Length: 210
Image 1 (cartoon, rainbow, N blue to C red):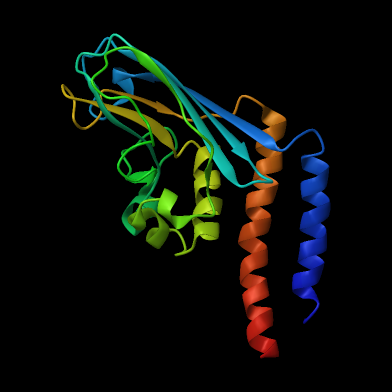
Image 2 (cartoon, rainbow, N blue to C red):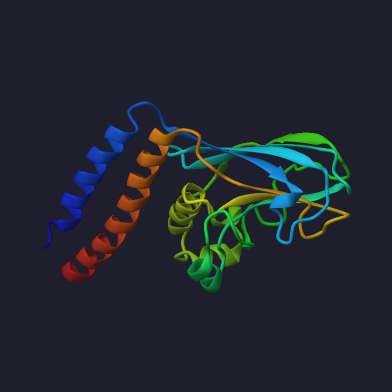
């Protein structure tokens, strides 16, 4: 029994290396519109969003574009289930969830614009300061557990960009993230499952050996 965590670690290492031999950056993308908001709004604004996740450095890099907004930009976020209630009822590609990252707004996101673009700097998912406190608490309580949860949400249609404006404070245009590369999706699912399986086993192993 005491060898179980190490056997799991070896298996996960083999699976991850097999799944990610082609690269370490996973690309998520979306199209933002007012019709994706809940409830839908009449905005003619449109936008695009891209997320690049580096599984080696554990970083996220965000790019956004928007045009023809009714109001002017105020803040933008990446949303995902951020409470126990939201986690238990979340439905892929349908729902309104709390802010996952970054608190307040993306660092350097431009305000008072109706059209524009944003290229954010990469930021660490191993730093709790880059998540909202509610998201961390609801998803395991640590940066590592929050990272694993966020990845699983992005992979399963439970994460979205929301650009908020003066005309629509709750969000003018929104888009759920998808993964264009099916092979990357499979590899990421393997990694998330390994994290979820290995951590509890390792904690049990430590308790048994203390």
